[in-house]
Length: 409
Image (cartoon, rainbow, N blue to C red):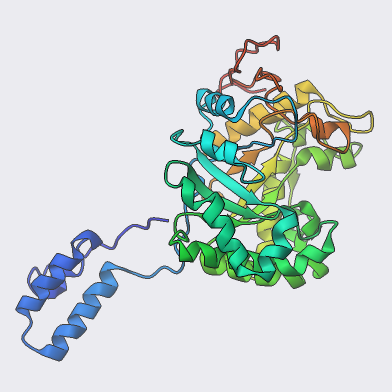
C-alpha cells in the first residue's frame, strides 16, 4: 500500500543533506546532483547510499490493494436460472458494486468482465489444492490459462486458494494448503504479478476454539499446526486474514440465548468484553475482533482481518430460526450502511472493515438446508429479492421502503 514520504525539515539547503528529503520521484535527479558536488569517492558513495535509503524507505512487504472501498459481493453460480455474465456486469454496474468475488475462474465470466472496470477475485477450488501443492508447474499452467491472457482488460485483483479448508470436513487438504499457496505465489512472481494480485484463503469460524468473549478467541490446537506456516507466509507477502463471518449461523445455533437485534445491527444493550471493557452493539464487529484476538494470541498483531463472506438467508427450513425476508433485508441494509461509514471495530477503530456480501443471487442448485438457496440480494431473474436500495434488471414486486443510507432499520 502507498505510504507517505518523509519530508526533511533541515534549514540547510546545500549538498546532499537537503536533497535527501525530497520526494522519491526526484531521487534520481538529486543523486546526479549529489555526484557532481562530491569530492571524495568513498564519501560520495556513502552519501548516495544514505540518500537512497531515505528516498526509498523499507516498510516490509508491500500489500496489494485488491479491495478499494469496503463493500463487495460474492457472485456464486450454483444455479440453472440466473442471468448470463454480461447481464450480471450490467446489474453490478447499475448497482455501483465494484468489488466482486467468484468461486472459480470461468472464462465466460472473465470475458464478460473485460473493460467493465470492476475488480474481480477469482478462485482455485478445493479440489485442485493437492494438485497445486504437488506440482508448481500446475500453478504456472493455471495462471497462463486463466489470468495472464485476460490482463489488464479484466481487472483480476485477487486469487483465493481453497475455501474454508482448515477446520473443514476434508482434513487431507490441510497439510498441502500452504504449499499450494506458495506455488501459486511463485507463479505470480514468474509473471511479475505478485504486487498486482492479492493471494489469500478464506476461513470459517470452525478454525477458532472459542469466540466469546471476543478477546478470548484463539485458534484450535489441531488447526494451529497448519495455520501457523500459512500465517507466516501471508505475513511475509502482506496478505490479510479472511474470515467468513455469519451472525445468522450463530443466531440459528442458539436463538434462545442470542438477541436477534444484536445479530441484525438493531438497537440492543449489546455486550461488554470483561477482559477489554470494550462494548459491542452488534455480533458482526464482535466476530471480526474475535479473529483479531486469535491472530494476536498467535503472534500476528499487525495482520488485517477482512470478511470473505457474510449474509442472511431470506428463507429457510423450520429449524432455521430468523430466516426471513424482513430479517435478511434488515441485516443487509444495516451492514451496507455500516460498511459505507468506513469505520473500524471496537478493538481496531482506525482500521475500516471490508466485507464481501453473500450473495448476489439466490442459487437454486445449492445442496444443503433451504437457507443455502436463499442468500441472494437478487432473484434469479435479476429482480431484487428485497429492497435495500438497489435496482434490479427488471421491475420488482418487492415492497419499496424508500431506503437511504441515512435511515435506520
